[in-house]
Every structure is written in C-alpha cells, then in structure tokens.
Length: 339
Image (cartoon, rainbow, N blue to C red; front, side, top):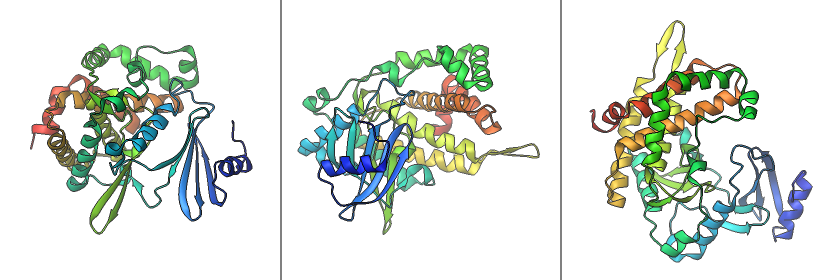
C-alpha cells in the first residue's frame, strides 16, 4: 500500500481504529514519517519508503520484530528507553508508536559527563539482554550490510556522485593502509550481544526535567546480534562528526574547536565507565576508536554522493576518519588515557 495523499494516510489510520486524527504532518525521506494526534495523544507512523536505495536490503521488519517481541516480554518491556509501540503491520512495513513530543535529539545536546554517563548505562542495559528465545526471534542482519566494502563501487554510484565520488575513490587508492585497517576491523567483529546497529546521536532522544534526564532510543531497523563495540564507536563517531562541523576552517583563521573536543573526550570517558559498570565487560577501546573512524568514513561517502563540491569541513571528516582507523592506538590514548 503506497500513501500518496494525506487522505489515504487518514483512511489507513481510521482502518486500524484511530478515528480522531488531527495535527497530521507528513515527512517523506528514506522512510515515510507521519506525526499526528489521536484523542490528544501524540503518535508517529513509520513506513518503509518505496525508493529505499541506501538500505535496500533492510525493511522495517527488524524494528517491528524487536519492538513487538519486546512488548510481549515482561523483562524487556520494563526497559524505559524503549519507545511504546501500538500497531505492527509486517506485510506493509508499517509501525505506529508513541511520539515523544518535547524530546530532542542527543545530537543537539552539548557533551556533558552526567548526560553521557546515563547514555552509557542505557546502552549497557540494551546490550545486557540475555534472553535466548528473544534473541532467536530477531531477524538476522548480514554483517556486510553493517560493514559495507568501501573498495567496491557500482557504476551507478560513481555516476550519480560525480566528481566528489571520484575524489573519494582517489583518496582510498592513495592510502591503501585505510582499506587494510578496515579489513582488520572486519576480522575482529564479534556476535556477542543484541546491538542497536545504528546507535548514532540522532537516534537517542533526550528530555530533561528538574535536573533529571529521560531517554528514548529509536530506529531499530538494524537491531540484531552483533558487536557491542560497533554501537559504542557509532555514538562517538556521530559526536566527532559534530566536532568537525563545529570547526571554523577559513582562509584567515583555523579554529579546530578544541574546547568542544575536550568536553567530548571527558564525557565519552564517563559513558564508557558507566557502560562497563553496567555490563561488567572489559571493552577493547582500540576497536571503539576504529568504529568511530568507520562512521566518519561512511558520512564522508554520503557527502561525496550528494555533493558536487566538498567543503573543508567535509574533507576534514575524511582525514580524521583515516586518523581513527589507521592510527587508532594514538587516538585510543588520547580518548581514554591522556588526561
């Protein structure tokens, strides 16, 4: 079922028992997102987009299965960071859940130790789910969908990206140590816990009231059994991306946003300590750093696909990605041991 008009969306909502729909707002992107109120309660409908080319091997099936099975499992249902879902349509890839109006993306928050400490605890709680039946009920995600090969490009990719993609390919050819470092990272990938699979800052919603933080972790399309370091590297990588875009790189000034980086380093350390305390796991810090670099490399690739001209900040993304992937020992020292 394709939704081309708001009348069709309202008709579907009416068919599933939501008959007093108001304040309907439609956003069409990779997925169709619809926010609305029903009897004054804010809800959100999510439907897989028909032109899903970036994640064409993934539907909303993982998210539907994870949230549906979570709601049926008393142990997992009590985890407060899970969004409350009401409607699951597997055949049409449609999910309706509570819309947390007033919450904001973690990406819009400043790095603060108390905030990051709470995030570490929540992520550790997700990774600590040890229900075998629940794990077996999750769809399996092919590892290659999480870790795409960067030395393979289709003609369509090269053509659609234009000169920026060519510049990216030339960079990979110039630094073979980058690809070999990705290969090392792939070889160490473990399937040791339930991971979110896309744990970037945009997928963590935060609400603060009376000095206390409340969280919701959203978008479980890539949730599967995988490597815990992947999630941790992604949340670090998303804030490193923000750090790079905080930089003011002009001809007459070179502001590298060092104060922001200093706060990020302290805050991420707090996140890791909180995570380790919650899970009783000794992490491989070097692997976290490499996954952060992989995240930045993916972001740069997306920039090269959609931009004809690359900014200095975007080029800096590529350089820092290489620093974190190739010179990971040094970056591990900076983030976890260098005071």
